[in-house]
Length: 281
Image (cartoon, rainbow, N blue to C red; front, top):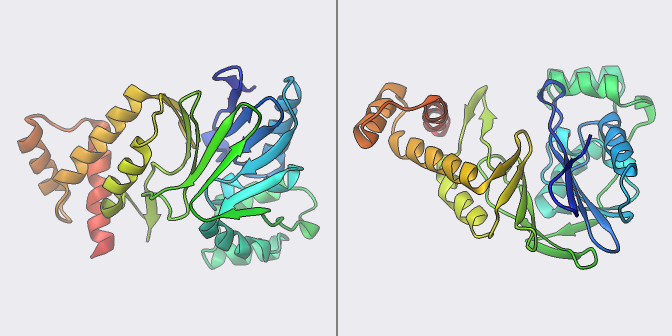
């Protein structure tokens, strides 16, 4: 079931057990715009079935927030203009060359091109895999693109991110809503989850320039401004305390600065920034 944020903005909540991210729908007077297409054709079809229950304008545009498989493998189900940034387009080219039969998928897993979970989702939720081929995007933008859906402007922009270097966000000014995709998350390198410490401040600056009150994230669904501000505060505090590859030292620095123990979120972030020091070294 779609969640209604306003008369013109809806979203399908994430499902962590199925590796399904949040999907968005923005409606203007003339057209509608989709944000991310799901992790499979089945995910996309379920989203489209929910949209059909609404009396909304036809879907004209689709925006992919970044080139991680769970956000774009449903792309082929949408009869619309697909928009990506330049970096995302380069990453999608590799996927457009993939074959999706069992032998090929297993080879991609063996060479760490895709995860075992990705293979499982593809095998169970993409039919006719022997002839499946990912479509190409239609519009590739460099930095910023503005779309008018009819009295509903969407600002589409590439930003710096601790998650991936091809992150796109979508801002709806009159609603003060920002779709972040996975931009505010960390990443995994050599089996270590980490936040890229060098990109934290630039990312926060890029995101906080928007006058947003609601934030749609890929795997938490929706946060208000207070929740996002708390998230930034905890990340910044953890980053400032993690100045070496020692978690113990990071915790001690945090305690000395804050005069308290870190909470569970802050401890998780401390470990992630310590991991980043390890990755960078």
